Structures are given as C-alpha cells and as structure tokens.
Length: 98
Image 1 (tube, rainbow, N blue to C red):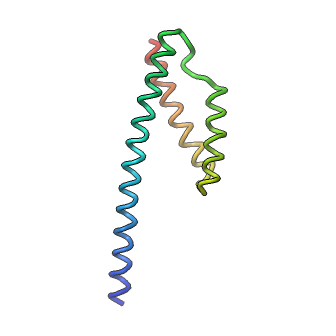
Image 2 (image 1 turned 90 degrees about the vertical axis):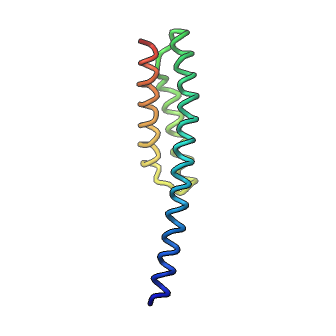
Image 3 (image 1 turned 135 degrees about the vertical axis):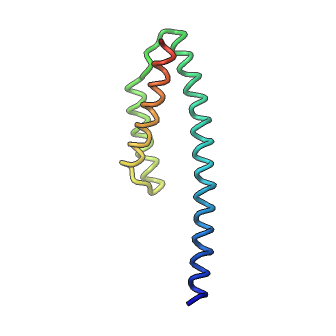
C-alpha cells in the first residue's frame, strides 16, 4: 500500500510541476498579447478609430471556439475566457482614447 501511495504522490508532484510551468507560459503569453493590444490601442487613439471592432471580436471568438474544440477544451469556457480578455483590451483602449 505504501508503494501505491508513494507512486501517487510522485505522479501528483509531476502533474503539479507541469501545471506550474503551463501557468507561467499562460502569464507570459498574456503579457506578450497585451503588449500588442496596447500598441493597437495607441494606434487607434492616434487615428481616432473606435476602441472596439465588434466584427473582428466575433471572428476571434468563433476562431477560438474552433481551436478549443480541436484542443479538446470546452468551447464555452474558451469563449468566456476570450470575451474576458477582449473586454479588458477594450477597457484599455477606451482609457487611451481619453
């Protein structure tokens, strides 16, 4: 029984280490993404363009739902996640317009 518990503990440790690495990848990826969306926001502000682009946002959500299905990720979760990111980007763009 101790052997099984030790094996389970080792597997748990491996999974958690992988999760920690993936969390770091997500954070750095989001950081990089926001650098680009900030540049887009500055361009929009400089050229008096609207802070949001509903047609592009709809295409992006559709694209992400498709990617989620192919990645075996709940498309509804992916949609909520991207919608949250988009709303943050728009909020930043609106602040740049002020």
